[in-house]
Image 1 (cartoon, helix red, strand yellow):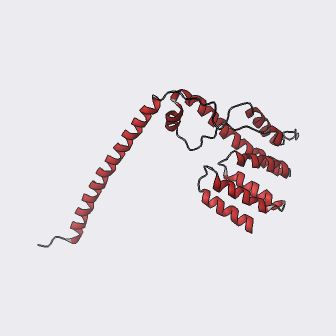
Image 2 (cartoon, rainbow, N blue to C red):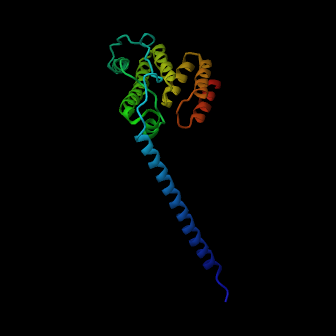
Image 3 (tube, rainbow, N blue to C red):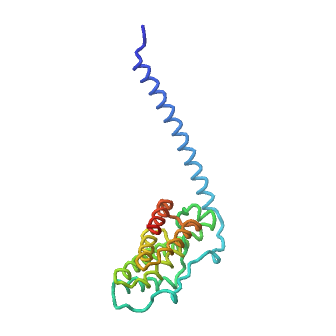
Length: 205
């Protein structure tokens, strides 16, 4: 008696699913073991000196710090001014485990604080630039956005707005500097290649 082809196919499919599931379970278990071994090592790493890390300095003398008598603008100016007295580190994309491995668990709290300051910095710079732009203060918005880029911001809107302003004031050739910054620096942006292509189109259109 011939065994139906469909039956054979089902049996093969079941065997394959069991094999794939078993293989996946082993892989997941191995990953978990590697993670916890790494975490254990991280939690026993001695505290390192973090005084000479690449802290971000806010150049208040190069930013539009004058009072604009506009709450939407001055609010973010004040946030940046307050941040200038704090330590700021761009730790985007680095896990807590890796931070502990490199600098020790004793530094994790401080490093998390400095990284949070960075998040506040780049978000506030973007909001500040938007407020300046919306009030036709284009030169001031450029100052803010160019510093944001120097800080390797991961906020795509900042790159787009700066490029838009360059076009509006007939200096679209400067977009090339933005593109070069993205391609030659360690800027942690999702789909960075797509952003570079977008900016190239803006520059050449």
